[in-house]
Length: 143
Image (cartoon, rainbow, N blue to C red; front, side, top):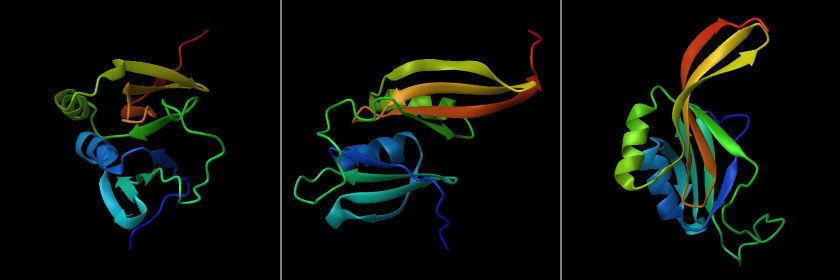
């Protein structure tokens, strides 16, 4: 049985087919299930999950204000992946420029630093997606 995550963002998109090309082909998500008649797809990548719903002005969707691109201002979705290199290659082949180049970053978490190789890309509607390859932990630098 498919196990749903406890927190699953649902992103409104302008064209479900274009969004699926990005999320499935480029990022490696799988379609867990979809309702094409509703312009809806539920995606999964090793437990990281997202729902996509195509905007339909006649569907009574939960929109608090008119949508203007880029969508998702003020949020970025961090997704753990096994390796970022194959994803950046697919994004380049598909013509998606990186919003922030790939780099190794170490973030302090109490007395350790958590490392991740990360980059940020915008999906077709402008949502920021940060893909992260875990590099492990090390003792935090003394301040």
